[in-house]
Image (cartoon, rainbow, N blue to C red; front, side):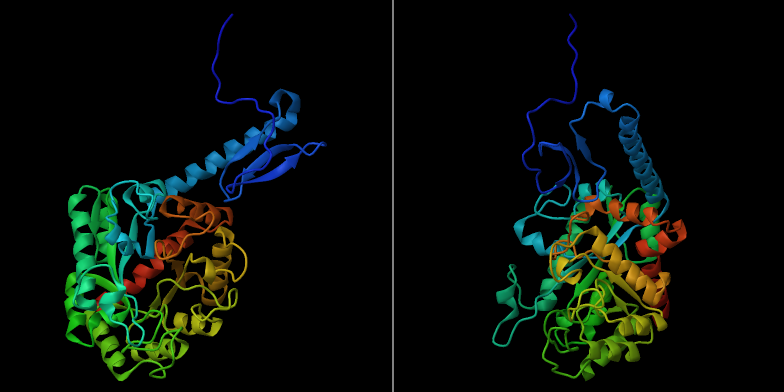
Amino acid sequence: KEKIFVNSFHHQAVSEPGNHLRTIAKSSDHIIEAVESSEYKQILGVQWHPEWLEEEGLKIFQWLVNQANNFYAAKQLHKRILTLDTHCDTPMFFPQGIKFDHRDSRILVDLHKMTDGHQDATTMVAYLPQPQIGESFSSKVAFDVKGPAQYADLIFDKIEEIVSKNRQYLSIARTPADLYSDKRNGRKSIMLGIENGLALEHDISNVKHFAQRGIVYITLCHNGDNDICDSARGCNTHNGVSSFGEKVIQEMNRLGIMVDLSHGGEKSFYDALDISQTPIVCSHSSSRALCDVPRNLTDDQMRALAAKGGVAHTTLYHGFLRKEGEADIMDAIAHLEHAIDVMGIDHVGLGTDFDGDGGIRGLADSSELINFTLQLLRRKYSEQDIVKIWGGNWLRVMTQVQNFKH
C-alpha cells in the first residue's frame, strides 16, 4: 500500500570487482558476497541481509561508525595543524591550459582537490628538463622562450596569475609566517621553487633575481649533470659539486634560499653538505634501503643530513617506493617510518611529486592526502609528531635558512 525508496538494490551477482575494490568474501558456490576498497579507504560492500546476521551484522555497522569517527578526528586535526606538501609539478601542465580553480581531471593538485584532502599548502616548482648533448633547452619545453631563466619566470608569472584570479582562496607564501597567516584567513598557500639550477643560466646574479621573485628553494639539478653539480642519473662530470656550484650554494645561503639535493648524486650530496652553512633539504626523496634506485637516499646519507639539521621528505613516485608491483600508501608509510628510524622524527616529511609522476594507490592526488593522516593516527603518532611530519620540520629549516640571510 505504501511505496518507500531505498539507496540499495538487489542484483544477481558481481562477477569481478573493479580496480578500486577487492573481493573479501564468497559463498559456498563461489559467488562474491563482499568487497572492500583496495585503496585503504573506508568502503565496504556486502549483499548479506543484515537481519539474518543478528549480532554479527552489528559488527559491520559498528566498523563503519568507527571509521567515520576516525575520519572526523583527522579532519579536526587538520583544522588545528598546517599541512604542507614540499614538491609538486603542476606547472608542467600549464601549456594544456589547466584550470586550477576548477576540478580539473588533468592535474592532481587543484583548489578543489586541496580542499577535499584538507591540504593547506603546496610548493609548486618551475621544472626545467635537462637537455642532452646536442639538444637545445627551447626544444624541450612547450612555451616559446629564449632560455631557462625566461622559462622559470614565465612559470612564476602564470602561478601569480592563478593566485590573482583566486585571491579570496589562494595566496603565494614566502615564509612560514605567511603560511600560518593564510591558514588563519582560510586561504590555501602556494610556495615557489625551482627544480634544476639550469634556470640560473650560469649567471650567479640570477640567484638574487629568483630570490626576489620569492622562491624558497632550488633543486640543484635534475636527471642529468648541469653546470652546478652531478646528478644521481648523470655521468660524474664534475665529481660532485662544480666550482660554480659552490658559489651558487654560498649565494643561496646569503640570500636565504634552501639548498635542495633531491636528484643530486651522492658526491654532490656530501659536497653540498660540506659547503652549505645552513642545513640542506631533500624535498622529494625516498629510502634506498627499501627501494634500491640511485635517486633514493642511503641510510648513511640520511644520518649525515640529520646530523647537519636537514630534512628528507618521502615522495610518492611509485618507482622510488618499490621496484616491482604497484606501490600504495602502505609503501609510502614504510619509507617514512624507515626514515624516522634512521634520522629521527625531526627530519622527515612528505613531498608528493604530484603532477610529476607522483601519485599512488591510496594517495592518488591532493584530495586523498587526509588518508596519510589517517594512517599516522592509526599508528598512534602524537599530534606533535604529525605536525612535524606535515611540514613542521621543513619550516624549522626554512626559518633557519631565511634567518641566516645577510
